[in-house]
Image (tube, rainbow, N blue to C red; front, top):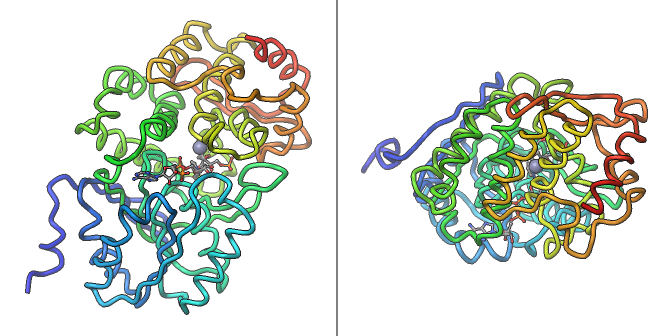
Amino acid sequence: MTPASARMDNPSLITVPVPLGERAYDILVGRGLIDTAGARIAALGARAAAIVTDEHVGPLYAAALTASLEAQGLRVSMITLPPGEATKSYASLERVCDAVLAARIERGDLVVALGGGVIGDLAGFAAAVVRRGVRFVQVPTTLLSQVDSSVGGKTGINSRYGKNLVGAFHQPSLVIADTALLDTLPIRERRAGYAEVVKYGLIDDERFFAWCEANWQGVFAGGPERDEAVAQSCRAKAAVVVRDEHETGDRALLNLGHTFGHALEKLTAYDSRRLVHGEGVAIGLSQAFRFSAFLGLCPPADAERVEVHLNAVGLPTRLSQVPGGCGTVDALLDAMAQDKKVKGGALTFILARGIGRSFIAPGIEADQVRTFLTGEISA
Ligand SMILES: NC(=O)c1ccc[n+]([C@@H]2O[C@H](COP(=O)([O-])OP(=O)(O)OC[C@H]3O[C@@H](n4cnc5c(N)ncnc54)[C@H](O)[C@@H]3O)[C@@H](O)[C@H]2O)c1
Ligand SMILES: O=C(O)C(=O)C[C@@H](O)[C@H](O)[C@H](O)COP(=O)(O)O
Ligand SMILES: [Zn+2]
């Protein structure tokens, strides 16, 4: 019999470690990993796996994952949810928790999130609360989830009060990012995920931003640049998460663009037909740079460069580009007031002194934001 290690040989495999002590795990990036996912997951020592997926991803990839797990002797169950942001809800959480309990998943067994960030955040949160914590594995299937949401342990659901307001930190035991799965991803979702890739360059790596400007077409086409973008994004995110797992400091930098983006998602009622997370982030990244320029912190030419690149790949950058409108300035400020970075009632933004020079800016006056937004809403 071929040893498991030999069967798992994959020349395109890149391993990104996340050294979090006893909870350390690996992010595996490469083409074709789903075929050996069963052996890698079985190596974690579980006897059963509950796959959580959605109605787009399940028909494409659940059979391959199930076969791979069953070949290792694992008992497999599955729950399939409707696709889209609205699925990150209390109702879905109840469905997933009940399905995991009905499948008699023990603490030593595994919940396996097979899907994009919606499924990963929801399944991860269910895993965090069922039996006060069962282990889980991320098998991310969108560019966004491979470069961002599957890593770092933020899990949760949305509330009528705002994005991701109910959740927990719960790290996965393994992340398997099979980049071949991205071949079926619609162009709109490729663009949305790409916004989070660009974010890493804008935070603290101007060279990576320049690399994105030069290589984005390869990333979209699925060339070797795509694997490189996924791996580099995971390295960047893992480095921040290891420094500040629970966002008491630096991790807030990963929120660049999100104070704006999350407010827009709330005001579009989490309706993926109008706005998806990555589109909100794209507008938010551009707004964060324009706000920084408005405050005299950032050269306007850098804000312009950010916008030009996002527009070049087909992403929106202005509030006026939100389908159906983004609401009033008051509504935006009201939504921002629920941001998790708010401290002492004052907003915290991630601002920038230039590309790759982002910083955490607490104590931003609502009046400054109001004046800026009033100008932006008609721009
Ligand atoms: N936890 C975190 O750190 C973190 C980070 C970033 C974003 N998020 C969250 O992630 C969510 C967005 O995730 P997303 O952009 O992956 O959206 P998503 O999960 O809604 O997936 C996007 C769409 O693509 C479909 N899809 C997924 N994989 C596919 C594939 N391989 N082929 C064809 N179709 C496929 C899905 O069914 C869905 O319709 C948001 O809720 C956001 O808040 C969380
Ligand atoms: O991992 C993080 O930390 C991030 O901020 C990554 C973001 O891209 C992601 O959208 C995250 O879910 C936002 O976190 P939140 O705490 O603002 O809900
Ligand atoms: Zn995000």
